[in-house]
Image 1: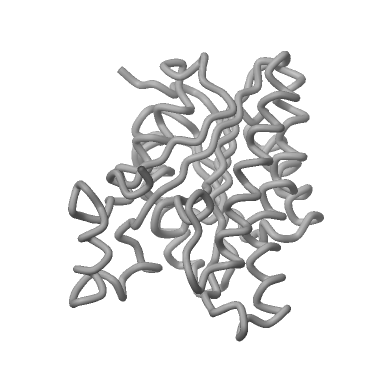
Image 2 (image 1 turned 90 degrees about the vertical axis):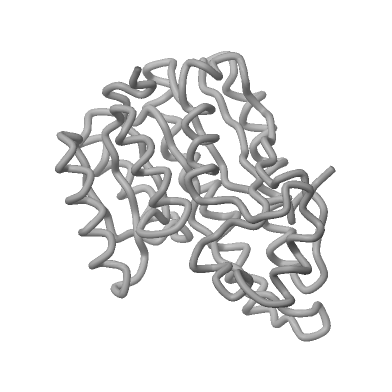
Amino acid sequence: MKLLENKVAIITGAARGIGEAIALKFAEHGAHIAFTYVSDGSAEKAKALEERIKAQGIKCKSYKSNAGDFSQCEALVNDVVKEFGTVDICVNNAGISKDNLLLRLTPEQWEDVIKVNLNSVFYMTKQVIRPMMKTKNGVIINMSSVIGEMGNAGQTSYAASKAGIIGFTKSVAKELGSRNVRCNAIAPGFVETDMTSYLKEGETADKYKAGIPLGRFASAEEIANTALFLSSDLAKYITGQVISVCGGLNM
């Protein structure tokens, strides 16, 4: 059974990692995919993903767009609505980290993380709720983190941005529930992606895994499975929630 047949989904930051896994999972379940990438260095990967999804008979288009720029988000959503007809699902996945101890963290590093991780969620959500409210149907999924729930030394900017996403998510859910627009957050723990490749082996990896009851990092597909569930009618009575996918790390 395909859970997202003919739905239109926008996924930010989907040229690799969790975003790529979500795009593939949604396409597998019948959703048409519009996804973004931000750097020229990701253009080749984005094109390859686009062609891979199209080969399944699914409509797909990649867009070079910076989710941390309001005008680009506005243009993106307008282009997607023109191309695909509407927006049913928005996954706000774009994110970065610039870890540093607070004493060494620069204002520029702080602002970069807040801009990409938190501002982008506001920018994209503000745009997609217009077509969703018009059809009285929509799902917004915001990618938070267990770090936003529990904090972590050396990650004040990242934790603040991800905690902000949680508060934003709950507020949007209360505002838009009467319009049948659901908004939830996913809080992954450690996930095996390019961003965590330096943690995969050695003493550092063993240290982190020792604190995870399930004893391992998540795969990107496991995060994608959660996004699929929240986007589908299986979760049609779930809104304003934070789903931790962390192997028990945040208990």
